Length: 333
Ligand SMILES: Cc1cc2nc3c(=O)[nH]c(=O)nc-3n(C[C@H](O)[C@H](O)[C@H](O)COP(=O)(O)O)c2cc1C
Image (cartoon, rainbow, N blue to C red; front, top):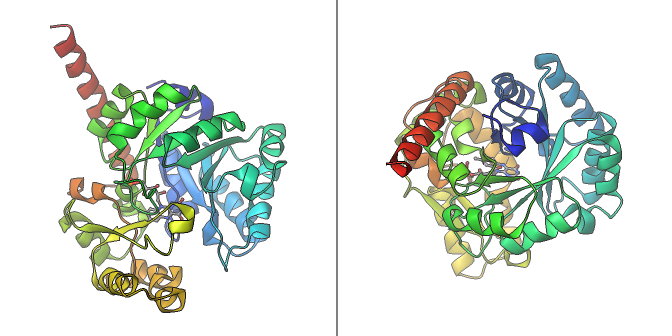
C-alpha cells in the first residue's frame, strides 16, 4: 500500500498510531512499527529530556523501523514549554523519523527556529489539527504533513464539532502536503474510506489502545469491547475555551462530576483533581473505569475484540484492499 505517507515516513502501511499519554511507550510503539505501520512514542510520558532520550533508545532496541514522537504543545504545569523545547531538541539530536505536534503550532509555541532545526536534522514534522484553517497554517510554516482530526476523536477535539467525513476532503482541497485522517478510524473500511476522501493514510488511537500490546488492565479491555459509539461525551468546553478545544472521554462518574462543576461555573481548582493525568495513569493499570477521565473516541463503538497489533494491522490492510477493490468494481460497473 504505497501512498505519500508511506513514502514520507518509509513505512509499509499508511497507518499511524496517535499520541497516547501513559500508553504509547516503547513497547507499544515498537510493536506497531514492527508490523510495518508507524508506532508512536509519546513524550508526555516523561518528566525530563534524558528520560525521553532513554525511551528513544529503548524503542530502537525493540525495532529498527521508523516511529513518530508525539509532543503535545499545550500549556501544562508538569510539562513547561522549556521541557517541550528540550523534547523537540532530543528528537532532532536522535534523528527520529518524525515528530507529531498536537496543540499549538511549533512556530508560535516553541519558537520559529524549531521547524528549520528539524529540517536540518532530517526529521519530518507533522501537525495534528482540528480545522481547515490550522491545516493551511501548518503547510504555510513548513510542516511536512498534517493530520486532520474530526470531533469523533478521543482526546481533545476542536470546539467546532465538525466530523472527519467533512474535514478530510475540505483539508485535501486546501493543502498539498500529505494528509492523515483521524477520529473514528478503526478498521480497513475506515482506511479505504479515508483514502477515498483524499487522505494519504489514517491515524488512530482508541483502536490501538484496544490491543493486547497496550498492556492495560483486563477490565479496560472489557469496557472497550462493551461500550458503544454513544458512550463517550464532550466536556471541558469552558475550561478549554481559550484553546478552542474540548475533551472527548468515556461517559462515567468522573465525567458527570466534571459536567456538574462546569455547569455550576466551578473553577480549575475544583476540576484539577478530577482531570489529572495521574488519575488516568492509575486507572489504565487498576481497571476501575469510573475513576478517571478516560480519553476514548467514538470509534470505541466499532471495537469488538482485543487482537495483537500484528493481527490488527494485517486485518486492516486486507480489509482495506478488499473494500477498495469492491469499490472499484462498483464504479466500473
Ligand atoms: C488513551 C488515549 C490517550 C491520548 N493521549 C493523547 C496525548 O497525550 N496527546 C495527544 O496529542 N493526543 C492524545 N490522544 C488523542 C489521539 O492521539 C488521537 O488524536 C485520537 O484518539 C484519534 O481518535 P480515535 O481515538 O478515534 O482513533 C489520546 C487518545 C487516547 C485514546
